[in-house]
Length: 143
Length: 207
Image: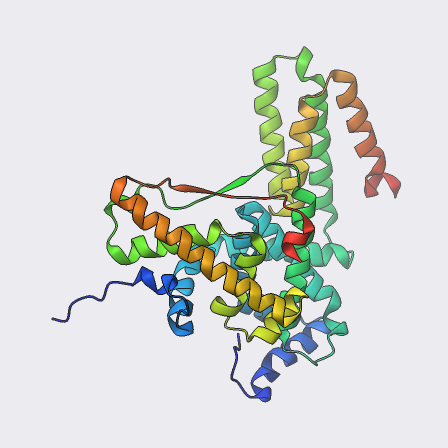
């Protein structure tokens, strides 16, 4: 049985490392950043959603669910300080998850979630103002 | 994805896919996604150090490919064109993320002490890569991972070839220094498992 050749870290320590060896070790290292299939599928769904949205083909039902979830989340965020905080927070998290699913995950929902979490920490008036501003600016309202 | 040393017609299938994409062909676009998404993700993750931001970069890049497919001139390989877009997208995300603080790219916790030597070496090299400035990581990725020739890699990054060579040289020197310090540290105690991959660097870091 041949001995297993131990990778030579010292390849990087040479003044002029051999390119083939550099390639091999860099490739082995960066291959660890491989996205899994679920991530690739999720990104593809998000890309398709955005492509369809760019062509104006996003189903109205999806847009409606998105609107409802976000408005509900914003309302709860606005009222959170005067409601039962723990229950309201759980409901907020549930609505945020719905919003994420409505958008098939990905960038818009992630950013929206960050924004909403920020909104949830604002005083009542700030939260209501954010909710109204968002609702007024939404395409469905404009239509 | 074609690398260096291939004849010009080697790139034709990808050019055909891009041409079909420009005509609204979803299947061709899906094939391009299958060819490039993982590479774009790795490049973005190596640059940004955050998985969510790397996913953003893939989505933004592929959306830009869909929208701009018709503007592809055919002068450069498709890979050069797509990674040029990726580079700009990553730079834009870094500008947006500036001020949000560092993000940690978690390597596999607990595996270093028990892993056999090859795994430990891969971890070492990845950890060392993540300590480099973003511009060095990007140069290393394009030349040593994607196997692009230096002229093409320089074109992707939007810098002169001499600058790319300089970055590669400096990157190798820093890698040697970092790996050397790991070797010294390994003799005295365990290394940390999380490597801070700084976000929010100045745009010059990307350029």
